[in-house]
Image (cartoon, rainbow, N blue to C red; front, side, top):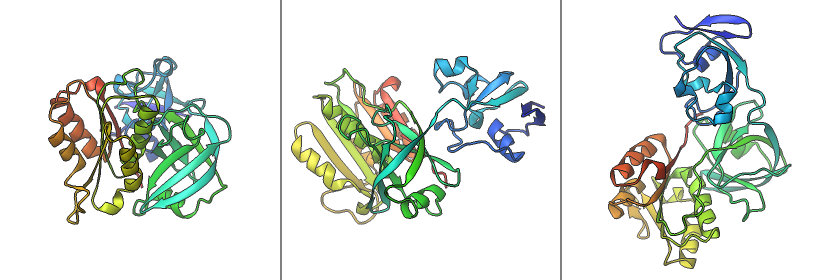
Length: 323
């Protein structure tokens, strides 16, 4: 039986248990959020033993060299001694500049107390007042939005953090964040390549940033954005996207999609991913961005690869649905 050593005590891992699950079972006070190796909130350092390649493959070479690994996806094959990695992802203070409700999505704008280097499409970890952490994608473009971090927060039923952000947090309050992280960003130097952006729900957030970043950097190739929702109310940036399309009609194409029964004349009926692949069945040479529900992201990633897009040209951001 594999064992872990935490704060001088040894514990046996149960069958199929991750290191994070074991730590939570024994009552260890450790930060975590997504439990899927995306947000990196739970990152730790292996003092002794091998955490395995699967728990490190998303980390930078510098992090790996320092022994970092992600406990939430770690199933070690050897005994493992753990230690916190306190100096990774420093916590930074921001001020809430504005809160704008857009249906069940909150447009939240944060002004960092100190400048933060970020790119549209990356994500940050938000710390709620009770210590719970959640990850949200950055919808703003630093050069266009004066360094303000814009987040799109969908209210989840019984969501601890989303409810707190919607109902309790006020303009002028301090909010602590970590990051940024992620590589779901516009790639500079490829101005003529066609771009396909597919998102559902608040998966539009990183795509909104990537789209504006591309246009700001002189992208000349065609850009297609498919945004899907169960109903028209979920197309929360509909007017802004229509206005942007009207300004760049030869280049930018916005296709709103409604999968529910009530479809207005200006929307496509069905799922955004289905509509995108029906319109673009051959994606050789395209760069593709897919953001939203994890199942949709995984299915669409496979489909666009089969349609000819290279794995290296498929960027994804699967939203974890933590309450």
